[in-house]
Length: 138
View 1: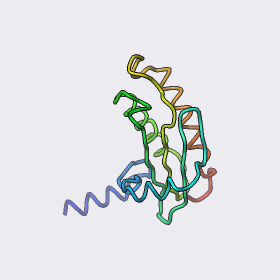
View 2: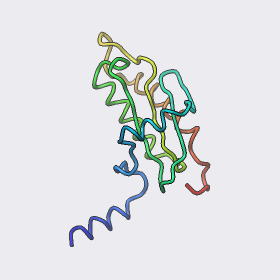
View 3: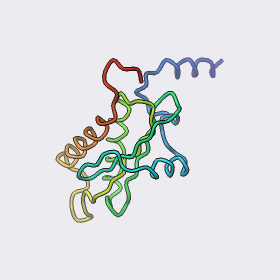
View 4: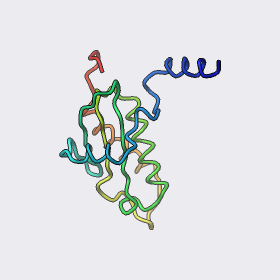
């Protein structure tokens, strides 16, 4: 009976979750998207995207340690990316957001409000290029 209740709750959730079905997790799935040319670039990020046959969009985030040496910074980048992704109106596609330029060093602060604001603006700009217009089916 508990599984029936849980599955009913899962179906009632809006698409603003970040369940496993909305993530790119396998290496071959990452590779198939990386084979394509980047769709959009900003000062620190590159977006790769390709259409998929699934009912929803999926996201993968790559934040290399050499570009963001502190775990706090990498986790902030991933958290911001997932938050923006789950609240956006994306078409059926696989998206990978990759950090392409160093955001801070070990000597600098790991996380500041200014850094977080700048990263959020860049990520919003990236994801907005792929969002479906309001009123269009996903």
